[in-house]
Length: 432
Ligand SMILES: [Fe+2]
Image 1 (spheres, helix red, strand yellow):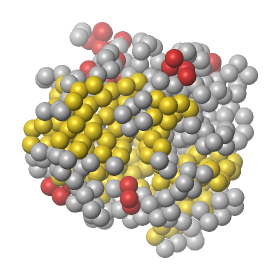
Image 2: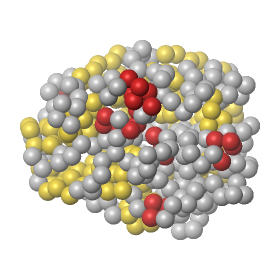
Image 3: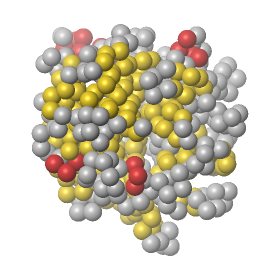
Image 4: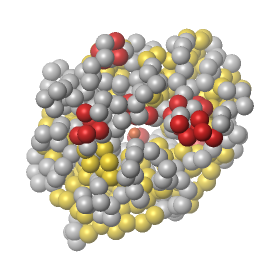
């Protein structure tokens, strides 16, 4: 590709960011090494696979790539677009009067399992329910109770089984609403979160006792929203400031306490937990983003904020200087002091020991995506990390399985997939 073409075609149209065209089903996949017999379930990962040549990386039609592991073999691979109502007959998220159509969805960001339902998520719409073999069932509104979009980063409390989430994107107030469903999927809490303006709120944090909202200075831009170009309608604003809002889980309709922090942007929280009178929040932090356009020229690094609820102060500290994204932990420790997090770096995965602030790398000759932890028993290191890894030499992808206790060692298995898996966003290991 020439230099000129390189600057015209955005990164998310090139290399392994480019979409694939076929929906395939392949059975009994070849494996190099051996698939651990303990892994019985589905690895499902979502990401944009646009049918049109316009728009932002975040606005492409969602496609889920799934692998079924069963009794030491890789039983199948499938990839399917999420067939939302707007996928089949396009209509925009924002109506002419500024209200939203919550059925308009690219459903491209995440896939979770809660209360017996598998949901494909994007933050601008209702969830779309799918089957674990990737058929789309339809929009899911909690039995008619949810009249809001749902973040693509809900948190499942490992102690109560509750699903904590929020919706945002209303041009009129409330811009943000906190929601909670119980372990049976019954929606039990809906409450507005007061913020000065509509900002891009991609993720939030949950501890055993609190939820934390991140009101950061990437602010809604109506001109971009109405341009019809499909760009993300948010830009950096030097005047907005930045703050965390803390809500007690045992008083969900109570006061939200706001704590100012240094301006920054965070797409992804690794984890958060209560520590005495403090809340520790570990996340991947950008010093600034989207000042002039919706690009990704700035690197983000692991960071730690400690919110002192008694003193009313926040201490901030950088944990590491490697540029990373897509941090994940053992989700059974969500909201608790998990020791390990794994994030995607440049041709590597980085495993952080959050207790000692040490880190080690697993380096690939290819390009890994988000790594999800699949446990064998109760331990944080006694399972495996699963990640789709693209090999540019053969223009193909593997599902790579890494022993969590031998992080930099050879993978225990590479499952050969029948086509490349474009770089995408998030996924989960769903067990039988
Ligand atoms: Fe995300």
